[in-house]
Image 1 (cartoon, rainbow, N blue to C red):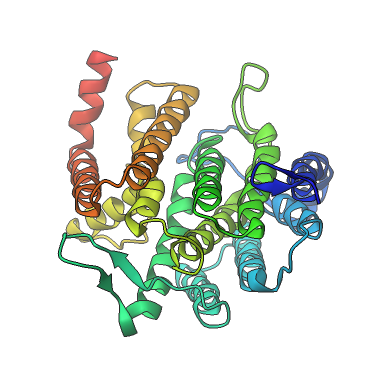
Image 2 (image 1 turned 90 degrees about the vertical axis):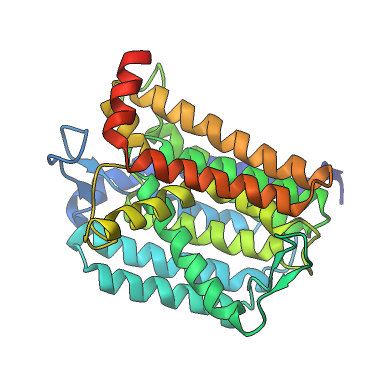
Length: 358
């Protein structure tokens, strides 16, 4: 079979098919969204002034599954990925239409994560050599840590879905970097193809969600269904890549690829707990909200955060490629967390400074 780059021609066809399928599906799903109640209604916390269909998630999932059949590799090792995505898609659709309690969502997120670590056997077994003293093995803590980390990633992407194009664009960038890391570390073709296929279906969704000179606002949203589904998929693919059987990439390199959405979630939880609030309560103090209130346009905010995502991913990639000590990469990553948290608890000062200096 002819091979172009890291993939065969058939795999590239699958990647292209995902983009085409979702581009046709999303307009067809807008009318049914009205009858099913899958509409995001305006309120005081939202920027749009009219109901918007939340069918991006189901469109991406259908296109992803249909195109998956074109990949010329056995798909059985990825069954827990697809089923977990389906569980979270269904959870999000019910939440988008009817609203379910945070506890119910958490239980179903845990179910998908447990399925991933048990049936799929996709687990984080090592943190790598973070302190220069040798590899840190998780041993019996591998399963609970992986479950917790997966739930964090699911909610990280859900929280990033706060302005047009942000969660989808960050997902595409993360998936492309995971595909690059997979290709250069010798991961199976199916793994690389899965990342690029999911990225291409997300790009098809972004045709209707990302603001451009030709589109002033999003015409569809991915909803909780799409955000949780993508968060789970990214967690599954990231952990799989970090397994020794999949490649030789540093675990800390993968952490750099994921740091932007995860940092925002962790700092939000800490900030709310310190204030005596529930960590699951909603607020408008995420980094993209701060930049918007400082007067930046949606396009500028999204572009800036995309730039940070690319920068952080390149740091992780170059650190692994050039053999930088993992302890140095860990120190840099910890600095990003500390800086982000410091800025988040002084959000009003940051907004004031940005308004003066922008």
